[in-house]
Structure formats: structure tokens, C-alpha cells
Length: 190
Image (cartoon, rainbow, N blue to C red; front, top):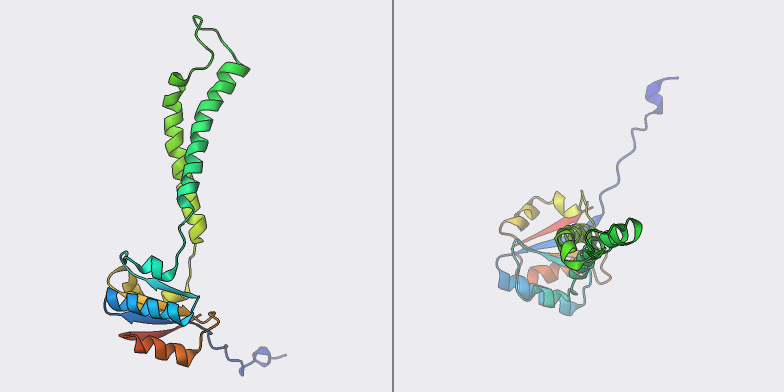
């Protein structure tokens, strides 16, 4: 049988689906105004990308406080407990040795062990919690395919409305973003 007969030449790859509409704004005030309007319109699957913190944007986006400080505190307290309980178990219970009538376990002698473990476990909990909460490692995101989005780490101010939003309509959402003063508008394909 001929190998060329097995190749289907009529096949075309499906077009990439629309992931989002991305609008770029010239300054912080226009981005904040656009974010307020998008929130007022009832969109729920949207995000802003800026190279620096924009005061008030968290409130407009209704971002809840993170639990990362609590994870860090939990890790640090675990380190203190390990630094204090482990010597107690080893020196006071498993292998008690009497040195000149001193107690088997004492707090002052174990602080130099507990403090570095406080720091170490706190750092591990912070880095691990941050990675978990951010979904790292995320090696691909559809926004990375848009060349203009590289400016989000330098001087670009972007508002992205995802196509998964229940209120998303390509024409209506595009008109909304354009009416809010976007200097550029890109369709992000998945």
C-alpha cells in the first residue's frame, strides 16, 4: 500500500479559541476608571496587570486578603515547637543524663536552636504557600502569546476580561473597553 494514501490532506487544524480581550490604558487614572466601570457592569472573570502597585485597585477588584501571613506564622510556630520539643524528647525523656544536678531540659539552652528553626520553617512555609496559592509552576498562560503584554513588567497598564465570564460578549465587551479609553485592544487566543 502506498504511504501517501494514508495521509489526509484535507485536515485543517481547528482555530484557536478566544481566551480574553486585553485592553491597554495610558495611565493609572484611566485604568482605575475602566476597572470601576467593568466592576459596575457585573463582570466577574477579569484582572488588571500593572508593573507597580496601583493604590485602590485591590478595592475596585474586590480582592480578598491572602492567607499567606497565616501560613508563614504557622510554619514559624512549627519551627519553634520543633526547636523546643525535640531537645525535650531527646534529652529529657529518651536519654536523660544528669550533668551536675542541672535540669534535663531548660528554655535558655534551647533558644539558640528554636530561633533558627523559627526562621527556617517560616521561610519554607512562606515560599511553599506562595507557590501553592499562585499555582506555580505555571509555564504557560495565553497572555504570554501577546507581544504587547511583555510591557506589563515595564510600563504597560492592562485590563483583561476573560471569555469565560458569563457577561462576556465579544462585540459588547470590545465596545465597552474602547469606550473606556483603551489605547490598544487585543484578542487573546488560547
